[in-house]
Amino acid sequence: MAYSHSLVLLLALLSISLPVKVFAHIALWHPSMYGFNVTQDTFPYDNRPVAPLINLSFSKWWFHGHLEHPPHPEDRLQLPAGGSISVELACDKGVTKYFASNAGGDVRSTSQPNYPCPGSPTIQFHTLDENDARGCSLAIAQKSNVNEVQPEDFVVFSVNHKCVWTKDTQFDIPADMPACPPGGCTCAWFWIHGSDAGQQEMYMNGFQCDVTGSKIDAPALAKPQVARRCGADPANGISGDPGNCTIGAKQPLYWYQAERNNMFEGTFSPPLYNDLYNFKNGAQNDIFETSAKASDPSVAIAETSSPISVSPTSASSLEAPAATPVSTARTRSRNRIAKKFRSRPRGDLKDLV
Image 1 (cartoon, rainbow, N blue to C red):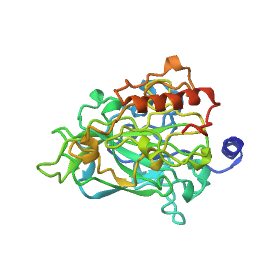
Image 2: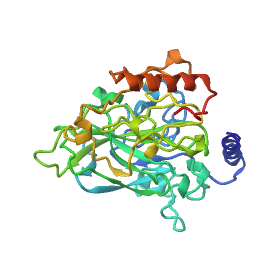
Image 3: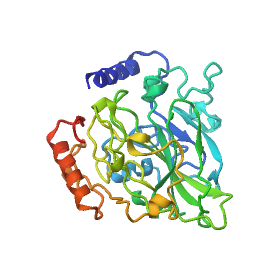
Image 4: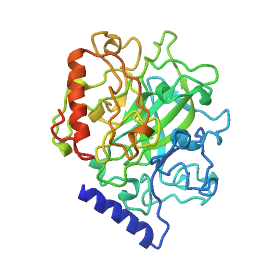
């Protein structure tokens, strides 16, 4: 924990002492993005697409508070079923091919062409090295009216475990992705970094999107459930519990906000888009109603059984998802874990399982 605090201090000192322009944080840039042309002067606070989301009200963190700054109706992120897309993750739009609409112009680097933040250390995008990249995700909601989309509608359909190490980042699309409604779908990019590389925070950028090349008989997306921590966690001395994994379609990880969290992990134990929460690298091929495990009634998929008050705000300000019935044995086991979780300091997950 002290290591994390020292890194936060280092980041603060760098932002003060460096004489050149230093980019910080990161976003997925595409013209289909809500807030694509938002600058540091658009809001009374820094609400650029790259700005982190920390302890915010729902209206401010949901779609980054950019719903009033929509893209052109014809700009959509195209998702080829069974194919892949390459997108640009960067600390500044001027680093991407969309630099022409950047307030600061073209700041691409010939010496670091695939680096997310040219001229800045990796700590500026909260990553110590390539092995410290903790993964990010793309999620989709089968609704064209963005104002109707709720957090529970999003289904994570692709994950890249090495995100955000390179600017050009690939996401694989499941072959069974169904077609969108006539007005297209709504998508979002999500990222949470490790606890060893900066302040606790979440990232979200929303997009208009469309699925191309869908099969005529493509299955529908299953109702997404809340992901559960189940993978090996050496940092906290936990070997993992595969039996606790959420199988099938999963919601994104909504964490560290003042409202509408579905994750209540401690300050130094952030939820991540990797095996820790059973998000496999690549296309998420178990997210459909026809997926064997997702449709197996013997697999108890449940949302968080009770809110665990270890987020940065009081428990009264957090809205936990409604629980669904689970087996008596599993309920007893999870209640035991929750009881231990509440009794330990923030971020200390040792011996919980």
